[in-house]
Length: 369
Image: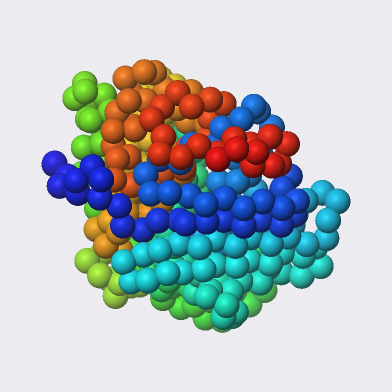
């Protein structure tokens, strides 16, 4: 499959600026980005990753590095603030996030506080890639589910809310299974609570994987000069529609009743989903080299950019954190070529690539740009 791309200088959504207070090792900082390639450079442990992490955090409401928001607050402060401004074809957006050690984060969009985090998703989109993203390929199914959840949630608030409802129902059902009390009477109630959002989650993941597969294959062929063929396959409930998915989940839960009671946990549902990833017909998790696994992970991210373009109408910002040094010269060049026409934030120890603007980071300060 060949992707039809915009001209090299065509850029739609852009992150214009980020403002930080007490975020990670930044006490106060502001950066204004340009369309094209923005290089964020400096020695290790100076704050390069922290700067681009803040952008991603504002776009998605979550850090790509840690799960506890309070760890983002400067070590000797009690609160932090992140503001990101961006422009889309539909207009200008400003996201502000307030963090305190005492309370949950507060988010405002264009100066209006939001009540639910799902309202943030899709306002400004971002795709993040770092060497740690190899977990998508190398580790267990939970990492591939996380990958799908982060991507699809940005594209569909309905999915985000359904996923949250599914996890809450799953937690309650598993708690009930562990008690072993009145299961025949009470478990069907939670089966129904699980099946409805589970059907939405399964359908969206299946559709995402189906769209992603040929795009990832094409990206992998591009990165490897046609020497390797990548194939993806969704492994989970995949009915023709949500109604079929819901029926399949209910049927599976009923058939697995005895086993679930014995094990004390729910054995069927989207929490067991996976994506099978093969290169040249072999399971890359088992048989792939480190280089093949890295290229496969990068192919997934490049394909994700195209899914965003197809679904949202604009490319997201692409964040490449300490990635180029991990690639050989050929694949580094191909990655940069593929990023043309997409606003890209790249962290590295030096500018060894063409950049439209450079930010020099030293000890939590932007000392040159």
